[in-house]
Amino acid sequence: MCIFMIYMTKMNIQEGSINVRPAVVKAMDVLKKTIKGLYSKKVIQGGNMVIEGKFNVVIEAKFQTILDYINNEIKHRLYDSGVISCPIRFVIYLKDTNVAGGYNPYHKIIMIDGYEYFTKDNSELGVEVYKNFSDIRFDDISRTIEHELVHQQQDERSGGKFIHNRKEGVTDAEIKSLLKNKNNIDPEMKRSQFIKQIKYFNDSVELDSYANNVADEYIQYKVKEMRTMINYRVKHDNEEVRNYSVEEVREYVLRGILKSNEGRFGRKLDIQRKLIQLSVGYKFLTVSNRKKYWKYLFKSLLVNRFEPMIFVK
Image (tube, rainbow, N blue to C red):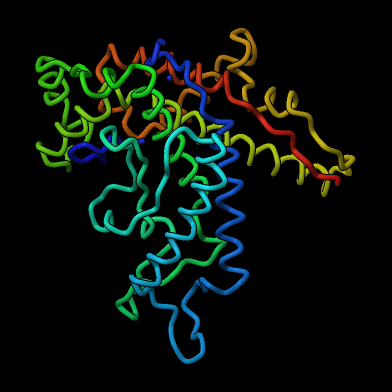
């Protein structure tokens, strides 16, 4: 969700032409190594275990010091070196705001909620504790950073016009049309929240970035599926253990998408159903924006930079 001047996480800026994935991959590599180092040195100790007679309760002052260290690493290793195009800072003041992260076009900075990604509530203790390293959702952090870097590029490439002077992505008539169908879309949601969701997901600034995030989720889902399939064949079908090239991974992930005439009709329907399942805001889109959304989504899938799948080192 976005608030005030924060815009949540491609010239045609809206046509999927901005690809920030290479920067995101490098950023996540630095971030993972930095955070893993903090756990290895026991600066952060996750989970609910007792540590030297005390629980690993999150103390705000110490947490701020930890975030300052992470932010300095991001600045020196990513921003100052030109890998990313604006500062990224993990902050504590977004806690309980329902805003996981956002790009501030006035201060040209991306802010991410540290509590959202590094801590969790301990209901038994009634306090906040650090997550185990294995429980940190780096894929979610990656999507947030990618989403906001796209907004930063939209802002930079348009000289601030795209975000500051953006037009409404939905008309009053379209809102009324969707409201008439509210009982079929989300009967439990309050009317005011329903309208906010319509405006958010149909926003010209958000539509393309949202499609980009869904493309990433689908790719990660298919990569995991491919790895599981290969492991099964090696174990049960005596298939030879080998590495898989970038092209082989791309071909598997985009099967049924890469070639319009490939596969059964049923397979194409399965792909569409999975993409809609991942598209949590799809039901709030207008008819015209659904067409744009599919265009942006398939472009994001096709321009993705894949990695080889390594089994033998």
